[in-house]
Image (tube, rainbow, N blue to C red):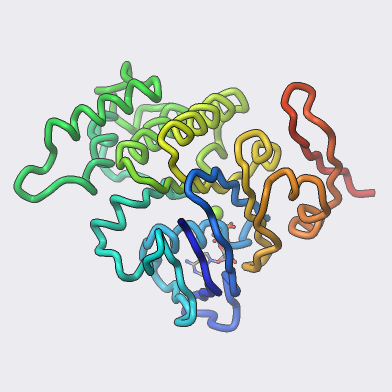
Amino acid sequence: MIKLKNLSAYYEQNPQKKVLQDVSLFIEKGDIVSVLGPNGSGKSTLLSLIAGITVPGLITIKSSSIILDGKNADSYKRKSLSQKVSLLAQHEQYSWPFSVFDAVLMGRYAHSSWIEPYSKKDIESAEYQLEELNITHLRNRSIFELSGGEYQRVMIARALAQSTEILLLDEPFTHLDINSQHSLLTLIKKIAQQKNSTVLMSLHDINAAPLFSNKTILLREGNLVCCGDTSLIFSGDYLSKAYDTEFGFFKHPYYNVMQSYITSAV
Ligand code: ADP
Ligand code: MG
């Protein structure tokens, strides 16, 4: 469903430094994928390119291709691409104090037409996402008056309201406490499985990957270290290669997965 062939990109001010270098991989429909790698390894760039977002100054090398459902991503019209892929970007900020409901409704923009900006179905869908994310009580609150966890729930509701087969989440839980992170990941996994959606999420917390994703993409300095079953990646020395750090692995006491911990430098 998502196929990357030799995806390479650089920023125009520094053409020598490829921020992604010959990344080739294949993601199947229904996969829940963790995108891991140290800061600056290219996770956000990768997700933006798959979403077809124009990043100022970022240039994709011509021989690169991104294939979505067998069709080159370049050949999708903007609107049909946004009906297929939604992205929750890492540093997204609003400049206007929209209400929570309006912010979620904006996710329906991909399905609106100029004749009828938002239909009854769009409004129902936004209401449904508020309920699903447990934020109906915040409906009329300004998005500037939310806690970090509430705000992220709103952003996830907006991305889900877009109702796409592919959901891209760029470090959606970085500022959340472990409890909120865990409950949101559980919810996203449940929704993705119900809808058979494909999810790619870059994660700061490596330990969340084996709990929530069946596949993992590991990046280092723009290069793909590996892409494969999360269980495989959490049993080899791939993480150490990517992060330049020694990792220890142990079996999770409640889940049948391997967890990692970072050994301290000696
Ligand atoms: P990650 O999300 O893994 O932290 P990014 O995709 O944000 O990594 O960045 C990959 C590389 O691109 C980094 O080396 C970063 O410094 C560089 N980069 C990101 N944004 C810009 C920009 N606007 N201009 C120049 N270089 C950038
Ligand atoms: Mg990033």
